[in-house]
Image (tube, rainbow, N blue to C red):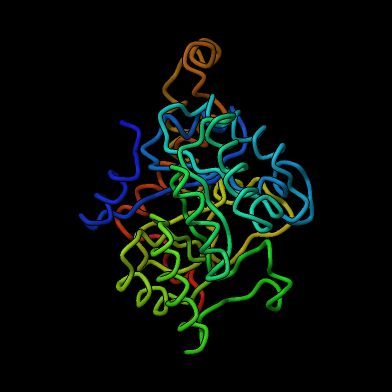
Length: 294
């Protein structure tokens, strides 16, 4: 599969093809994702929780993100990879924002960066874009600053919040963001925002009307034990029968495993990711079971 770029992703949106991406934080899982039809990978600061054991994303540092992103790039050379700017790496100044965004590009080989924040971060987005680095914005529920607006909650149920999200998209687009991630937003509100946006609108917990979907890989494979958000679907139960049947007709499983490495977690992950991509492309994910109420 040919590696995407900003233009080819925009072409998918223009053609009405839903874009599928996942988080990833290390080499082995990245090699599994590289063997799928997944469009993009996000090296998210959520890695601070699922890979590093922090209680939330706030403590994650740039050095940790570079370490994680570099491993993912080595494992997935054929994927468009986005580095997630951690809290404290971009808020203070345009200089900090450009310097740390440039680290993602130069030191870890990322293709773009993502940063949280609405209108107040538009200047940072513009500064990074002007330095030649593609940027994805992130609005709605923004985990790095969730404590400032009442914790982890659905955003956009009332007209006032919807107006603010509309303004945020407009300002981020003017600043040069080629895409925006909309998190924890009711589906009808997300539809209005997506239909009126010029950029690509990705959803995570924002229903099926956005231009693409993002999930946390550890939720998709059921590897994070602490909690699972309502919008997260574990695909392992759906592909286990396929995995078992693929092994069932092999007379020598030891030789098969040594030769193909398709007898374990790597292959289970690949099958689960392909099932996710298929449902995103056919727009059957997210269903109502994985969607917040309007």
